Amino acid sequence: MRRIYIEITDLCGLNCHFCPPHKQSAEPMTLALFESAAAQAARFVREVALYVLGDPLMVENLTEYLDICDRRSLRVALTTVGLELVKGDRHALLERTLLHSAIKQINFSVSGFLANKTAVSLEEYLRTLFGFVQSARLARSAAFINFRLWNGENAGNAAVIERLRELFGAGDRGENPYIQLAPKTRIVFDRQFEWAVLGNPALAANGRCLGAKEQLAILKDGRVTACCIDHAGALSFGSITTHTIEELLHTDRAKRLIAGFRAHKLVEPLCQTCGFRTRFDR
Ligand code: SF4
Ligand code: SF4
View 1 (cartoon, protein in one colour):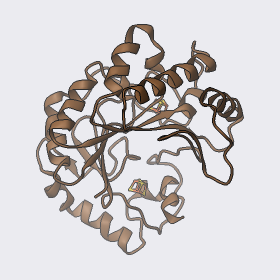
View 2: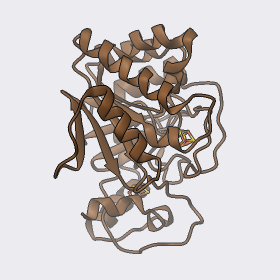
View 3: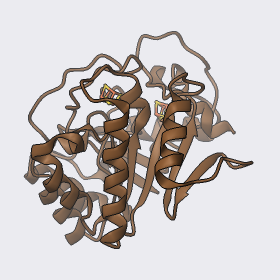
View 4: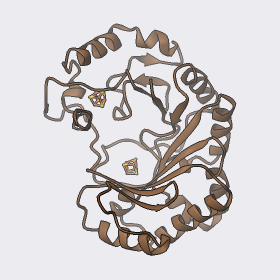
């Protein structure tokens, strides 16, 4: 197992056109449930990602979740649009939070910003994130910081790339699939992120995936599922509130899914609709 995703909140306050319909609730995963999720995750992995749907910066006491990870020697990856950093009343606290020693990687979803109309201008947004990177490096943070443009050939990308290159004084992309802005700081590109949605037309009946083998996700209510794409728990094997992850990986459903991937078969309807899986075919 390489990574376990833990959904500490499903709240983000945005409305990306590529996001599946879902309820956003203000209540994060309770600290007691997170403590249990982290303890169980630590038996399998050294790295957790604190997101599935939602933006971890919406969680007021994010530091307490990071402290728990630290105590379990779990390194943390966070993905956030980063708009909360622009808010004057939260900026200083969030900046300190993001310098937490448990954090290994921060992904700023610039594609998420571009997909929404907000009162914040692109200039203010990028300047804020640039300022954060400067603070992180001054504080000797070892975290990798990615500016994600996971939106294919979006027309808004050119302005983002130009401004970030100016701010960082960076060169162009050359032959690389990324732009190196500074040490440990990159713009990274990929195609549009696609969520799998049960009920969508099937794309394939055969194929492989690393879900349940290389990754798992623990949703906000404790349900364990095969991957971070399954935000609704359509593949749920059960919950950590009643079973251990070991037990859940030995349920008939989990074993069927894993054996299916091994035999190049997509046994679950959700997996048959999943375009994200095809990136593992590359
Ligand atoms: S894709 Fe992420 S940032 Fe966009 S609306 Fe969905 S949860 Fe929020
Ligand atoms: S095929 Fe898609 S939905 Fe199924 S486990 Fe893999 S990533 Fe998740």
